[in-house]
Image 1: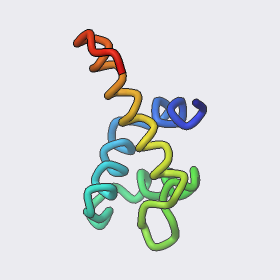
Image 2: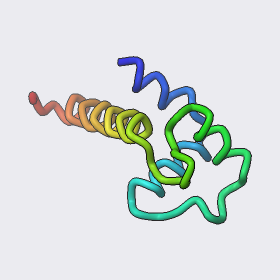
Image 3: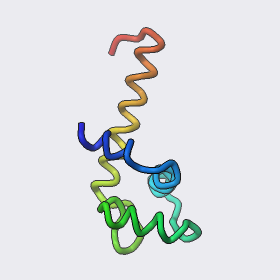
Length: 77
């Protein structure tokens, strides 16, 4: 799961920006350095929209979190 590791390598501000895009928001008021870093990693395209690698990293991180919550609750999936 290298994509999940990619999520862990992001700063909290970068993670927040990807979540914002996933929810339909924009990066208009984000720090340009954050947007540039996400673009350099291929998570955001030239139009500051969520790119496929960014979506993959985000969804794998969400799934990982859900599995951790289930295991803490004792639910077998």
